[in-house]
Image (tube, rainbow, N blue to C red):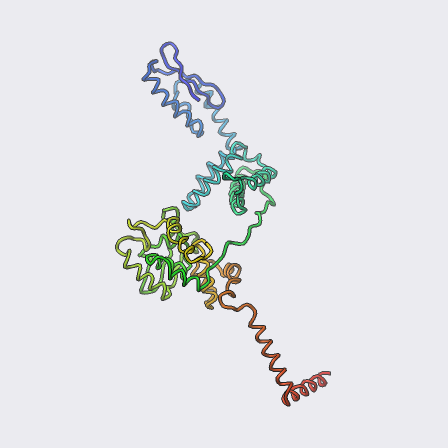
Length: 414
């Protein structure tokens, strides 16, 4: 922390730079006004030293120590460029990478850095981080508890998110500074299957019948298009084509800001069913011309999904005695209903914004029998009918003929 001293009626700036105490005489007279002025300058110097952007000559161009401190700063910068700390490397890496990321992903990344990675590794030289350090850190994450009761801990998914970001940073650092990558043979922790719990068709009708009338179009479209929450909340009227009966997904609303879709493949055109077409026509009477957003609040701004969940979604499920599920399950419901109806899986994948049909069969196919009742009983019914036919035939002359023919075929084959 810089301080101010007075000597022979002049003010002296007293501060530390690169571990060395520096005293620089100024031309300022020692009085309260100048002390305040110099204090402001020293605060700026402290900040620049912390950020690593302090230029000694810019503040003290006539200093007798300028040459010495400049050379020392050059050596320190060269050392940092060869062996930066984790924090120093992350500052550079983040600035370079953030242009590639959506605002929401930048925010998530910054939270992980500030809360977990920088407190643990910030002061360590990036090349000195070894595999045992990573494993110890991961184990410590599994023991982190929050809340007054101390019962809740980080989920497996959250731990994997933190470790994946750490791996990305170390991979880039090892490539740039030519040291052995410490993140070797460290696999992600095994996660449970995604929380997929779609609604049955009877539950869908029940919800649409009892939900608030002004939100019925909103949930109708969610149930029968498979749109993500961010996509429907950011849906604008210029993306609705009633003539072609298509909804164009070109953006998403995340944390109140419009941005790109989750992936490039998420940009797609969704076909309107008659139910969806009618729901959009009904919604048009409410918000078209009043807001650019299809679904908005009374001020014409996009809806806040947490508020909608609290005021509409949760109370409706409670009223109907249905188990609480995230509104995101409407997307999973659309996928299972399409599959159960026999729609082409490739068409379904395009409607959902998936790059292939793999996820459809891996995640959703096990729910289809609950809707179609195609659960293997068709084969049982076929075998049972065949057995009954054979038994009936064997009790008649036709049955005797069948038996004789069967025996003849057997003898011939022998």
